[in-house]
Image (cartoon, rainbow over all chains, first blue to last red; front, side, top):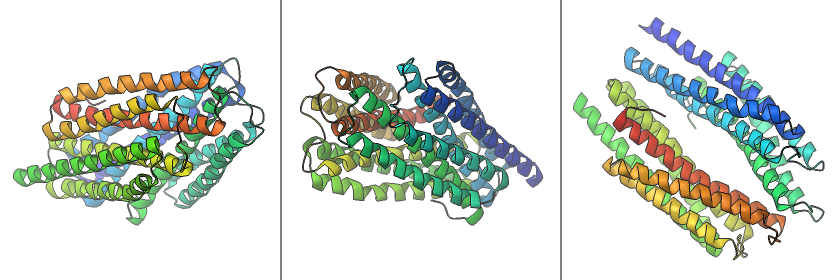
Length: 213
Length: 213
């Protein structure tokens, strides 16, 4: 029984990695569409998001089946519950990538960003990419040094997020409200993307250390 | 065994209602702080959010204990998994109320909103209050007509959310980027609050109809 359970749990872990890999692709496409006004990339990210949603639902169903059929013991249960939480965070990360692609689509053929603020966003995107990369490696290796890396990247994103607002409030920010709105939302989406990465890392750390937060 | 499980499940349901009631209080306080620049209300909402987070963690722990100790059958399991999802949505609703209070605190003693755009926000807040009220009644009664109500309120919020962006992009919107940023984020927070209400309602509907989405 326990052997079957371990195999099932391993499968859930593989599925989480599969979803995280699609989330990474979504972020890559979304950031290209957003930074370069690439409409094809934007459409691709938007239509591919359904796949992430589907895989999440499937993983949830599988997790519930495992609980029902295997009646796992307490420590194993926590793995299932953590997997449910992690799949939920990953699905949201996919949504946030889609939202960024949607801004790009809405502004096409214009770029959503001004040249002056683009460098901050390039840095945020790079950090979010590092976060989702580290999430994939963490899910695969269970090596908690990735979890610390993720937190460090997120702290830097928070700084950049504040820098965006400082830029918007500076005297030389003379762009339309439209641009201000796009910049505000995109910055928020990229910041939230990182938050969910941190959540996934915390759940994984909890499975290793036993401290839920 | 099954009787014990039913009692435990009932307790989880009561805790969800307790959290939802605190979320309602948070939204009431947040909207007062935000619409009237009331710093005391803002501080109250911000400090009370920890209570919601604590209750969510406690509910999660209880849910895991029930799974471990009772080894519930498949249909009961879904109740537990749905409760975990619902507690997560409710916790986020509390966060969003806190974010709104944080905007109010940041702008104090000024109001974050211009007089011209306040009426749209008053309507959004009213609809979000109707949503959290309906969530509480739905959790208590399991009557799915509340679920339909929630969806209808959310559709109206989406319209108002778009109306906010129309207002920001109109020629006569001549306010600072600061105000534009606050309005954008607050509208997003109120829109997301409604989304989470819809999520809770869907999970409850799923428990009744069996259709997870």
